[in-house]
Length: 201
Image (cartoon, rainbow, N blue to C red; front, side, top):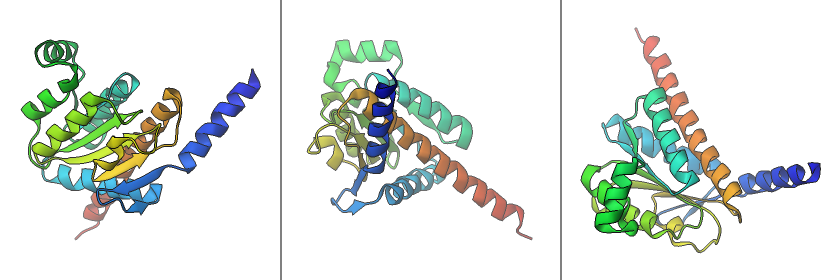
């Protein structure tokens, strides 16, 4: 069985090393430039008192809850994920599954908030509708997708991360790593600013 673990991690490393990033205009950037760009979006909007919202299905929903908690707890960003069961079932019942995220986004989003939208396929209707709702409310958007390179989600954000992963496991691990890296960058920038302030005067 050792060879299965070896294959998994070799594939994961190859995916992480080949992540593609583009902005809304389709201009390509390295992963590290993309992380810096997305981190700047989060930092700048949070400094204006804006919220950070996460949406995703399945494991990406779990990642959404995890990262919203971490951003709130570790850097003081007002972050949220729309994964409460009563909310999801009520919206699905009243508005349909395709508007599972669009409906609460239209209710809670404010102009200038940031939405991080994750979909392994990049084709989930509820994620795409959620992005459209966020745009309608004047939100910034960061997308994370995988599978087919022509998936629609990867062209809808201000910063778009695409992983050439062909399984949910590899896509989800990659998405989680990007989110944690963004958290790390935002935390580090806050610590740097705090350090500079403490040496003033």
